[in-house]
Image (cartoon, rainbow over all chains, first blue to last red; front, side, top):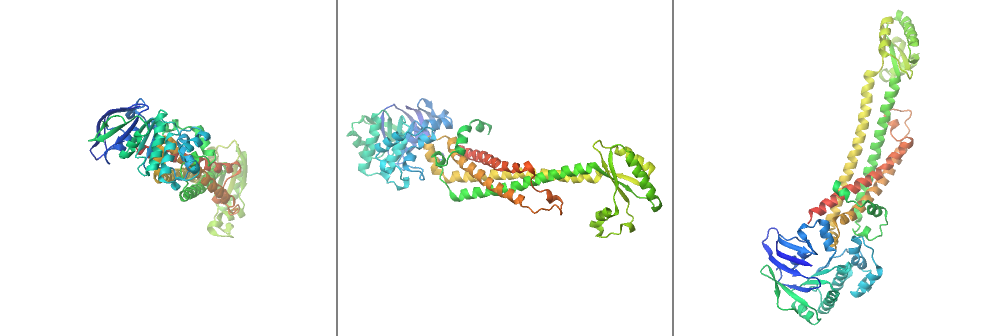
Length: 225
Length: 308
């Protein structure tokens, strides 16, 4: 699904943040990405959904070298990737349900109201369907963002510190939802520095692996969870 | 630009422009009351000015046609001769004019009319008989026209005091001026369209800059640049069209209620539209919407492409 061959990246005006990364994220896999703050976890994720392009090496997503994709091609790639950020952003003037259905709207696809209701139920947001995003709590925002990330049924779901603003119970609920997605065949990559979250995944009987960013490189840390 | 046009989905664009504003696609960009009012007002003001520029262009066009047409059909024979010869030369000239093919009518201008012609310079009640004013004969040519050069030579030979004045010398600058005015009216229309387009492009860029979060969210979920641009284009095109419609109607009303100056005459008499000409200003909102569409689309795509 995602193949990296000697991928490097550095921001303009700064040195290399990531260098010579060679790895593969196969379809249906579940990975955690860890590392200290500023190590490049978010940058790594942004490379995966072509929000940034590698400054060296080759990154292939869904069989396409992202460096050769047109702007429209990158947009199409993002429709296959669901992204969940710590600070989930919405269109604050649209109700939650319309925000969740937004990927379908911009793709010009009809919204199946029954499927939307089911999705709202899955993330326990049915009662907030008509609320505006600024009225949501942190946990509700993350669950709404997860629903928006998966409404196009993407093959790959990326989560960047998804539990950073959540209490433990809400974090477990969100992790459970991501594990359920993985069991349905989706590829999951979660960037986090929360080791407790990784340990908690052990209890959920999921085949997860841990990648660690250290010294500008990504290493496979330890055995499977 | 040509490449951009190839990628325009005209059917969905048309649906977007005329569709209900209540759809989610129509509400992706949050409404900004102040900017919306400003764009409406500016589009209205531009359209109002455009109506007058169009009216000016039409009026000067008609004026140029009228002058060239009416002046082309009349010429004047001026007779300056000693008092004892004036009557005989006038008789000779009238006889020549009656014999000349292509002349429909020859009429000696009576003293009262000469007095009116001189009034702007000498004031009312000019004693024409006391002034050395030449006799004036107004000649109306028929549709076939006459040989001006031949007539002039014959008059010189048979009535030495007679001069054929076919107005060419002073008519041409007037017609040129009227045509130049019409051209300037058209230039004004083009400038108004250009200024309107620039204003729309600036407003769209400002709107895009103010909606950074909207753009980030849309990109994250896989929106193409053209989809994001269309959300802005749709809004600004509607504003441009609606504002221009209001301005056009106000402009047309203002022209329709211009004071009637038939008697005072002159250039202002013709300022306005006649008959089917009243339909021309109704094109202004359509053109304004088109200008708004292309200006906003160009500005939005340019700005979106500048951001990786």
